[in-house]
Image (cartoon, rainbow, N blue to C red; front, top):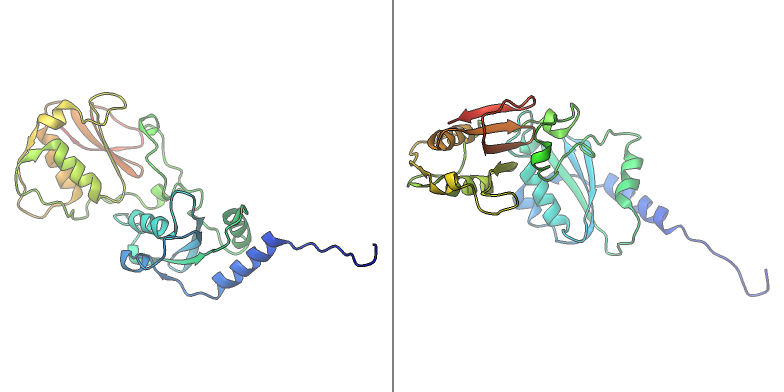
Length: 253
């Protein structure tokens, strides 16, 4: 080398990864509750989820959502599931001020897989509605929806103290549920509900009821031919009389 010159290579990705691992391993997890998550900044970063103190998920933020939004969504998802209490789930989150193009999520998963299964990654946890074309497929046995099925027998917060349309009741219920509720539209791709749902009036319910009881009440109020079906991770309501191999008919009209 010429006088006054030298070469220096700094492995930024590995240095960042090592510091993050050290930071995570020295942190105590916090409860994944709306009250706690609301205190987390809407910022870029990485996070971990724990089920009964076992690491099950590693995630990172993206351009559409920061830490608060991602954790809020997860806190919503773990509700109303069989075999799973929301209080069993906790989290660790780290804001990363200098966020590079490094795939931190993959590298953290690779590191922790030597000591943990990270079971909820690639399990369908937190996925969006797969759509009508996937309604006939089964959930993977090791997937989130198979391990923690939707629990329809939880009391719902929806109060039907006055008459309204089936569409109104289903829209209100959909907003309250921490899983997908999909019902038939007036046409493919339309935002409007099927005419039967718009025109059918639902009698009020005055006693406490579960999600299952409310769905049965709505569907049996509809004209003949309607069906509510519980599928892995979601409920669908369509004008059909059909047996799904991997679903359970909740109610028929």
